[in-house]
Image 1 (cartoon, rainbow, N blue to C red):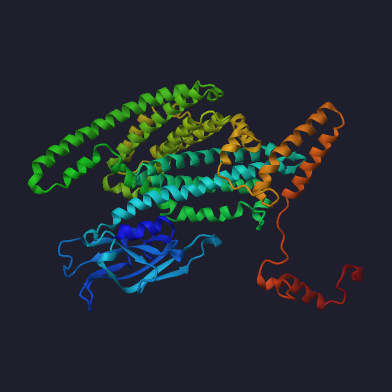
Image 2: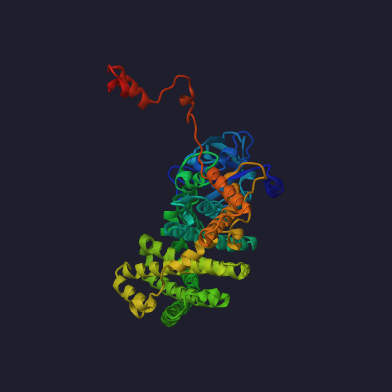
Length: 608
């Protein structure tokens, strides 16, 4: 009945949904459900079985406009009224707006962004069992639904914001860097601008590639909790860096609010994506490795299940434990072997590789696949060594944060190579992919090295030594990964700031305003080829020391007019309703007038 009623209305947009999970005392620790209690009771008049709930939720995305809320509650059944059908614990109730006692509507204002976020509250709200998600039998099983839905949602929607930011920065700021001139030269020719644009471009490629793989996973009806955490934390952080690079390049035009500013809102909104659905600090330093270490190990889950078997199955438990323990030891030994051999092999191939080798697509793929295999073995060895910490691991958040960085870089490296395989043939994609892969490999290497230098615990010195022997057997020589060279950075920047197939790839899905309308980003994109061609013509005229033709004169004049129009920023007579009032004088000017009123001479000519 719930599916028949809710699914069509959710699918066609009649009902907008929201999750009511986070509360004032349960933010990143949302599953604690502090302040969200419900008790199984019978209705005093009808005798119908249900629950009475009191809850106070905040930071709830879409709550101000939602028509239905999935409410996370800590269900208790002190009188045993469930009768064995359902359990105590995390339970989800589906309540529509207008449910008696439910208050939805008040909103937060996150950084003045167009982001609907607010509160869901209620005291002693009666909820019948028919409103429990899945009915009475699913009482106590609410976490399953939340995990699946949150894994899909935050792995798709939040990285999508970073993907949008990447496309906007490359499309808009890349064009702006050619339109804007300083010292009679397009700022795209300045080294600092090239560095910022290349970083924004390669981070943009990484987020797009990661998003493509994540979307394919979700389309396959899977909800990978660890990968979604990597995507959320890593891509939103890259999104912030992308927008910061764009802000640095666009400079004054990026900080003046108004219709001409196409990047300022993104700059203010990125911290929202970084904060919601699990703050990045918590996701990076606790959740990714805390969840993934045992979930993703091929033998650890079976060993833990053996420890949980009842006494009646003790013989089976011991046999399973011993068998899985031997497999774990063997797995660790093989990881050490692969880490050493692949490390030396990958180092040699990196050291003697030509800086232009990436221009061959096959070499690009084979080389970086080898590097990712090496880094994967390094990571697997390090993960095995983490078991020496036992339960203390969950308190070693500095270590887990570094391992999350390594895992994220490796996963996104594979996603980036997958993207290249799918889109191979786009002119210039080899250079951009090379730039991205070099940065990802350096990130993973630095994270693993920092972990080896700071491995904690009573056996930390031993684990650190084993890790260094396995991951970096020849010391610094087996840490070969470096940041992209200047020539590659300049080439990537050129591709992003001049008409190219790479720019066309980034501009996929970017809004284009109709001809004859004013839209800053659209106007910049359309002006780019004109300005580039005008610069080429002007350079040719200077080199050939000749007079321009009439067509060339018209082209240069058109480009200059576009430049003059597109570098303008919005100016306002007043910024607030108070300033707009007749007779309003800004406080600083009022103070000046008051001081002048006490003087005999109030202008320079009189004073002179």
